[in-house]
Length: 357
Image (cartoon, rainbow, N blue to C red; front, side, top):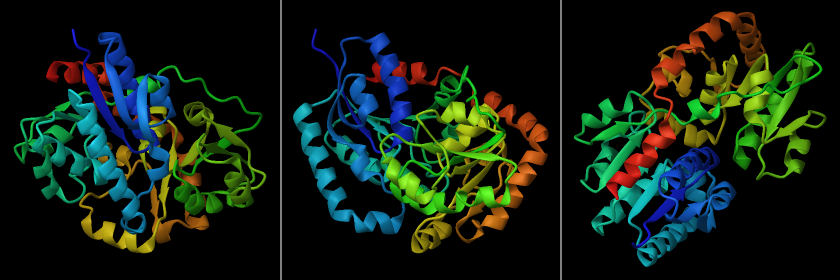
């Protein structure tokens, strides 16, 4: 029997972590399956043959993408050629909408089956782009419970498989530290760390009763953190343990906000990027919050300090409020699990991929 082939396109760290969960489940269900594509070290360690690493393309924001447009055009063409040469049974796209929506539209025109795992948050901005996914060769696997109803409005069939983080945060052991501490998560992209960490590093001057620990991502050099937050301890590759042991956290907007919520850590969501990208996003975004915990619960359980609101006095006040109200916040966060169940997202996604091949 000829081996089945999958081609993955993953463009950032959180997407890779979710992809790896599905890859593990696929290996259990179909040990001989072959996989290739764009991803990272974790995927390579699980048998995915990489043609390029996502780290060179980890940018976000309209202006930032425009600055790197020629690089993304070359990547797009390279992926097209490699996909055609590899002739996969299915193309698996994970988040990363700027590139993956275009690849989905291109692939179905060539008769290639597509599974979009973690589809773009079109319900938050530019819902008209849903039309690119309205095709019998496209399978949508959602990780947020309200997404299938949104896609159904546009005639697109989408399946809710659960959220992979539910399994990933089970049994997390809290980081042991000599004093109560606050976790600082400045993001996984270099421009995020440069934008977010300097202000975070000023918190010890206004909250001396707490220690502060910075979550470092493996693919960024330690020198950046030491330069932007001199003297603050770093913890690499232990984000969940860091969050589990923290009294509170400051988290750059992204998947980590939901990670903190599921672990039960009262947090403040922050973000500051290019000003013109922010203005454009503000015109397009149609939801009241940017943090996933707030969107799912329908209330600002985690304060959001975005762009000009991201100041030291505002951050200090928000953290003190979160710490003072931590018991009531933790109680509300317990309902997240109920809304995100079932807990077998990776297995359900893997089965859906195999059935559709």
